[in-house]
Length: 245
Ligand code: HEC
Ligand code: HEC
Image (cartoon, rainbow, N blue to C red; front, side, top):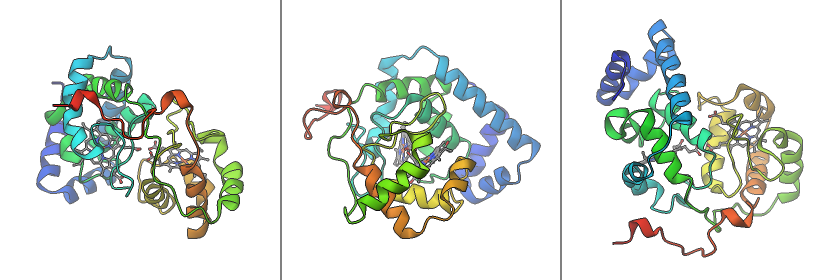
């Protein structure tokens, strides 16, 4: 396991008190910057490592407790869909969560190197997630303002997230098609209001004047964008055979 002493200390402090650790990072001390550079290296290493699928499944067992064995998350938005997300995005989000650059107190202890392993573990678990078909029945919004949502999407989102919400693996733009409405609404609001520290500054700029009504309309529209059939499970009741006992 490759750990810089700083990350180890940061993690231990964080386990005792999330608050102290978060302040440490926010101050952007030289050490925090160094840790951040390490994280970038971790992402790079994970992206280029040859994945070990057996270990990926082993690691995913921890994740399945919340994200479900199918990687479909929950319609109520508590846990996001992971299946179908670009590997580069999954790796970036995991590295950001580890680095406390994105708040996730529920998941944080389970994502740490001492829980699941180093960059290789990120490579393994994200390669395993990439084998899972997507949820054909994700949670959607009320359907009330879809025309308005479509207009907002075309004018403000297509350039990054793509015509059908497919995202861009190279640029770390998340795939948002088939993601749960309630999860996306929460993320969108956090990004707009500056609560998600790893947000893309250009996206923040683009959406800063969105009202709550604009927000629910555009996210409702997004939640109905469909991935290609080949990426979806053919049966909405599909169960991950790796977890059958
Ligand atoms: C105790 C529950 C829990 C466990 C265990 C857990 N997660 Fe999560 N995960 C969450 C929650 C909650 C969120 C969403 C947090 C938020 O709202 O910002 C999340 C978010 C994520 C995201 C970001 C998704 C996105 O669309 O940006 C990724 C990637 C992720 N988890 C991967 C994993 C992996 C891989 C594991 C196993 C190593 C794991 N999680 C284990 C609860 C959990
Ligand atoms: C300049 C490019 C850009 C624009 C424009 C943009 N986004 Fe994003 N969006 C991103 C990036 C990059 C992220 C991930 C940030 C990160 O690295 O953690 C993101 C994250 C998100 C997320 C959270 C996804 C997740 O899985 O957690 C949602 C939802 C989202 N965007 C919706 C939208 C919508 C809807 C619009 C238009 C109103 C929009 N974005 C405009 C680049 C953009």
